[in-house]
Length: 130
Image (tube, rainbow, N blue to C red; front, side):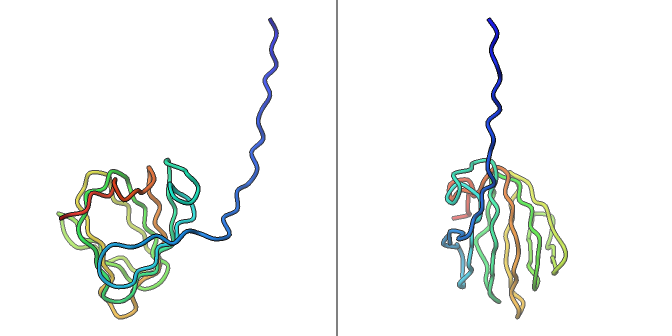
């Protein structure tokens, strides 16, 4: 029996209004998720813009996802079991699932950055310290 294969055409998806997610830690950090579990029901990836004020910090975590962080403005501190990494505007860092990490923006200008998580971030998969 001869069957034809019909390729389904996918249309571009534009996210005009990201969803703001509540941030953990101190300070009024803004998380705008453009793609991910909450915004686009995508469990494979999350992409978010973060605006982190001076003095913000969060508890340590052992996430179940790799995270790629690109700092656009300011400076962020990324603490791991092997030491402190200071990531400035124009730099990026990759962290890995299963490794303990803590993010903060202690310097006066805070930071603005893009975070990409594979698979997607969820509050349950971040595994924050108590």
